[in-house]
Length: 341
Ligand SMILES: Cc1ncc(COP(=O)(O)O)c(C=O)c1O
Image (cartoon, rainbow, N blue to C red; front, side, top):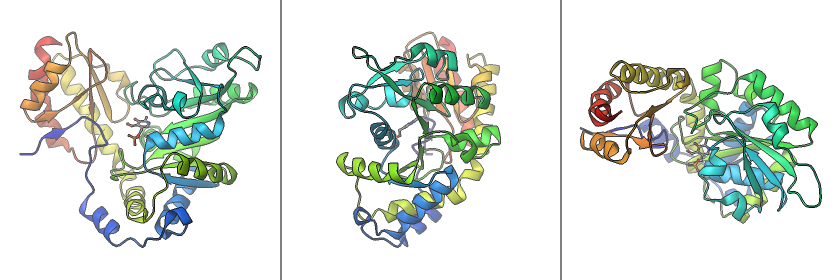
C-alpha cells in the first residue's frame, strides 16, 4: 500500500489528464517568447490575478526572488512577516542575490499596520531604508493562516503612505480564495507584485507565476534570465499549469475539509492542535519532545509527516490524499506522537 504523504502539498504527482495535456502541448522556444502554451498560461494567470502581465518561472522561490529583486536596490530593506518563506526558506537569496537587508515583523506571520509603521526606517544616509513589505497569504509557517481583508487593506494603505512597494507571496493564494470566498484578483488587488504557485495545492509538477504591470514583467524577464530560469520548450510544463488552473482550483475545498477533519480527530485523541488556526490545508501539531523520532515512527507506519520546528509537526492535505488516507493517518500519527504530545 502506498504511503499517505502529508509532508507537503508539493508532493502531488500529475494526474493522467494533466499528463495528457503535457504530452500534447504545443511548444516553442520561450526564451524567444514564442512558446504558445507558456504565452497562454501567462495570459490566464494575469487574468486571474488581475494584473497586466505574468511571467512563468520554475519555482515559487524564483518567483519571490525575481519579484523582490525588481522592487529593491542593494542596501535597501524588505520587511517580512514572521517566518515568511522568502526570509526563512529561500537560502538567504534576498541577501545574496538582491543585496537586500531583511527585517521580520512580530505576529504569527500576519502583522498589523502599526507593526509595519514601527518597523519602517526612512531614507537617512546611515540607515537601510525600508522600501518593500512582503505579505504571505496563506501563511505557510503560521499553519496556512488566511489574512483578514480589513487588516490587509490597512497594511497596504500604510505601505503606500510610507512610499513602500508591496509584494504578495501567494503561493497558496488559491487556498486563501477558497477559504474567504473572495476571488484571487480581489485578494491580490493593491500589490505591486504577486507570486503564485502552480505546483502546490493545484498539483502541477513545476512552475509559478510572477504577476505585475507590463513594464515590471519585462524587467522580471531579464532577472529570470539572470537567475537561470529562462526555459526553452517550457510549454510542456505550462500545459500542466494551465490544466491545474482550469481543473484543480475548484477542489481545494476538499483539502480544507480533510485538514479540518484530521485536526478534529487528532484533538479528540488528545493531541495538541489549535483548531482556530486550521483555516486551509495545513495542520500544525504541538508536541513536547523532539519531532524526529515521531516522524520516523509515522514513516514506519506508512504515513509521511514533516516538522515545522523542533516541537511542531506539520501535516498538509492535497490532491493525492483523500479522506480514506486521512483516516489511515490518524491512528498512525496518534501512535507515533500521542504518547509524547
Ligand atoms: C509560502 C511559500 N512561498 C514560496 C514557496 C516556494 O515554492 P518552491 O518550493 O516552488 O520554490 C513555498 C514552498 O513551499 C511556500 O510555502
